[in-house]
Length: 391
Image (tube, rainbow, N blue to C red; front, side, top):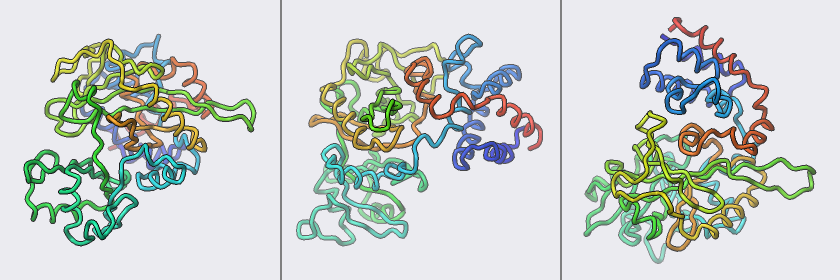
């Protein structure tokens, strides 16, 4: 047995941020409960900074593990952004920062913020009061007007998850489940620290791949080091992949709903020939087509990608006080929309989908600039040994 509380304390003492240490041990505990490995494999992985379950998922060996960014290293490197990360730490702040930089056209409309006490704050895109009364039925009436809304936690601190509200044949549906007006009125005040936004719909060409949920693109951008302080910043894409929902994941496309993830080339928008599914821990088992629709990835290019790439670079330049941008975007029929931008985009599924992060020279240089070479994964093993058997 492992004393995970003690391990988190040791990680913090060794320099890992307190919040990241808690997340790290929680993920390690989950990994060890789901993937049973021989003692020898566990020791090999932890000495190199990896969670043991990823030995099989990545196909790690003495030859290739150096090309993969380990769990321990990635968590120890954070924060990758300086104090300006407050710009993107929650979705509401990001909205107003982007509006201030004249980038609001690339965001969904923001209608409402549900405060911690359940009260409403009407946001910049809320219909004016003369058009829609700001009373107890505001959200219900907004749903009737817009027909579909997205509700999501403003930041990680409030927990919860994405909610799709939709009107279907005069009936309200919450994540595709019909809900009465009375149940709706009881549910909404419980969603504290939630924002209500426009529901962003994917383009018609992506609809043909999977229509039950929107395809979300996960794009991580890293700022390159400057030769001179006065030089204009430039960026490169660390990794990017598309997330498609599947049967059973409902109206949500995310990595915990068995979604299919397919990498793509950032320059061309062309999907890779094969993707991966989180529920499948066989690293060599690739998915060449969508399991629900049968659509084959090979040869497909994301719609209007050249324009989308230009917008992404424009946003990077506007947010150039930051170094690391984890973007969730949707390509709509009208163009690109940013759902969120964060500071701690997961590298672990990305490396399954897009390949080892450190095999890319620009990625390696970026992480080395953040202190990668100063991190000794053997320290993780020493801390782990201390906590083993002391639960």
